[in-house]
Length: 236
Image (cartoon, rainbow, N blue to C red; front, side):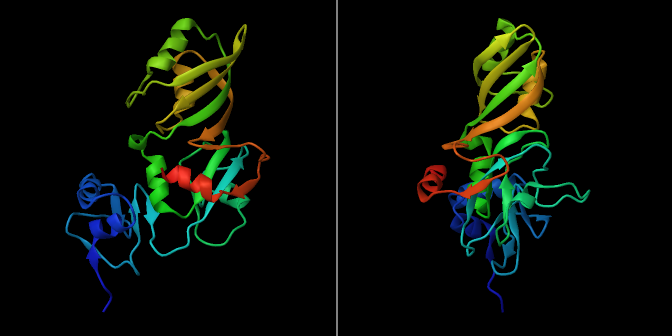
């Protein structure tokens, strides 16, 4: 008979925190077992069942792999696209079940983490952990001092006001500007929508940093394995 255990025990073993924290994640409806929303008290078979948190799979036994990709424009950030569009996984030539962490929209370039570590992916994706993401933005439009102050204070979007962003003006001439923006949230198309809210139309968007990781020495479309030190820093 396959061994079955409570979901929260499995989650705690995967490193998602205490039993109580795992129970809170379940109660929030963020956990699925084989695609079905889990409830407290549910049991699962670690060898047979697929457990996901925020759609990120948890797996205790697979050797963990970590890759940093410099994503080009034109690729969808997903494992498979049913419309047959190219995905970021077409650029990764490695064995095993890997997936991208977070999202960069099709036209956004830059740093993307590819892994099979569901625990790390969950930590990096959830805004409560405050992982910073830095972008270089080229935009059309006049950036006023009031607009800059709004970006730094927080911009009101449909789903609520964003957290304050760190913003540097790298260049500004007439109706064009280049900014560096650092945020720790992951709202859909957040940087583009924040920019639009202050009258800017983004023409080029590149993610240059994710936590301790940057793109130095990595050509567009290329990828590399993370060093043990980089993995350790991410897990912190």
